[in-house]
Image (tube, rainbow, N blue to C red; front, side):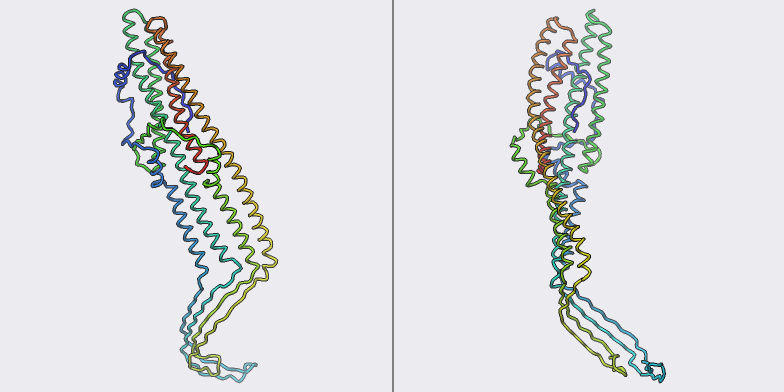
Length: 450
């Protein structure tokens, strides 16, 4: 998020509030850029737009749907396999010979052949392979759901940074417009004093040059706002030309000061990054279980029915149909797995250890990130207290210099310097309040609660 924007010298005239209001009203319309339809947007509305319109979040939710289909596919492996085969054929006459191919005889055979076969098999025991496959699919779905949460938080936090940057830029633009108006009034007063022989032409030139710098600074801020607004509109999938208006009450919102332990516990419980790492451990364990299942036999219940005709294994062939059915149990064991699967099992066990180690590393990083975010959050309150004191001192200094200026005991430049100190202090105080909001949501983001 934008931390600091350098301002040109800010000029103020020691005038009454009514004069200031009249001067602001006199700022030309061309100094204000109208982007398009204005859209007031509190933070809750910002998050609602992300939930409904974010393309990355929609894509993540589609991934959950695909993972759910994967779960259903894995569960279908528990259902029986049923195959049906039906065929019709033309059978030629049989030929009978001795072993030395002499004594050839032709045997008349029925020419129309039919075959119908029905076979069903049901896995009874697979060494845990099917259960492990289903567990892997379910863990994959949980990973996809966690990915949605992570994408939601990342998108929200990114949009919030752009949103608060808009707020800061709007605040700076307001200050620039006020100072342009006040500088215009100051130039007019200096011209009046010049006519009275109390000011030099060089003083007017100086402030006219300063006016150009202020107008350039305002234009740069307008361009910055346009860029930020465009990026935020894309993030929220809003129509081009929409001008987002941040909630101006954010600077007065009071954020809670829960202890660090609260946020550390929240991160352990809700962080999607930690949850993904934990799911990786579970997935690695299921893969290890799947590898071990290769060392176990597979037991299958089989049932079949064959209806064939004619009977061709009799000589001469019998022009009749023969129906045969059977049920039984089949056992299959891959002997090669005894010397092939050991390496695969050791590999899976190593991957499980690695996943656990990565989880420990991720937990440590999250702990450090929460500590850093919480420390920075408390620091923003210290900065706000400092800025409040700076505003108080700057206003006191301004009042003293203003009184001296009205008594003709201080120069205009002294008045301008005092005005600059006061306005910069007031501006930094507002920014400090916005920084508190940003730091608070950053802490929620790190803890997985935004």
